Length: 202
Image 1 (tube, one colour):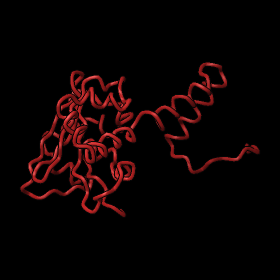
Image 2 (image 1 turned 60 degrees about the horizontal axis):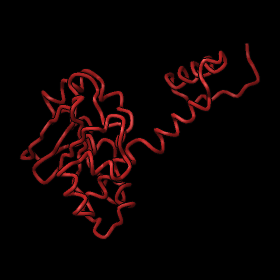
Image 3 (image 1 turned 180 degrees about the horizontal axis):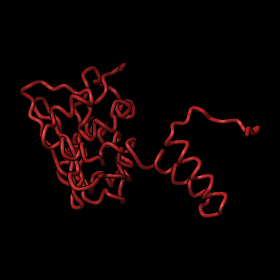
Image 4 (image 1 turned 90 degrees about the vertical axis):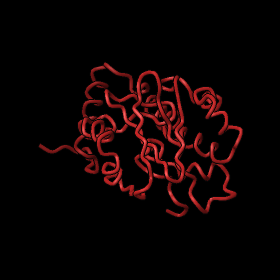
C-alpha cells in the first residue's frame, strides 16, 4: 500500500531504524521531541571534537597553555569551559617527530566526552580494542596512517581513572595561522591517534 508521504531514501538502514524508533516513542508519548533536539544540539555544538580541536589549536599557539596542559591537563582544559562527563581526569599525549601516540580502551570504551563527544563505533569494537595493542602499526595503516619505520608508536589504555587527548603535530605551512583556523585541521581521529592533523588545503 502506498501513502502520500515523501520518503527520505537517503537514510541508511540504521538511520531509518533509529528514525522509526524515535517516531514510535514520540507517538506513544514516551519521549519528548524537545529533549531529543536538546541532546542532538548538545553533542553537535557544545560537546564533541570541536572542543578538543580548540584545545589542540591553543596548545599549538599558546606556550603558557601548553605548559599548563603538561602540568594539569584536567584543569587547563576545564579553564576553556570543557569539563564534566568523562573529562574529570585528563592527560594529554604529545606527538613529535619519531613518536606517535594512540589511544584505546581495552576493557570497554572509556573516552573523554567533553572534548571528543561520543565514541565512534569502531572505538568500542573488540577488534580495535585488541588489535590496537597487538599490532598498532597495522591498525594505523587501515586508518590510512603510514608512519616511518623508525617512528615509535605508544599505545595508551584509557580507564575510568584517566582519559587521554592526543596533541598531533602541527602541520607545516600553518605559521601565523590563528587558532580558530588551525582548529579546522584537527580531526577527532587525530586526537585519538588513529589519524593525523590535516594539511592546509587538504
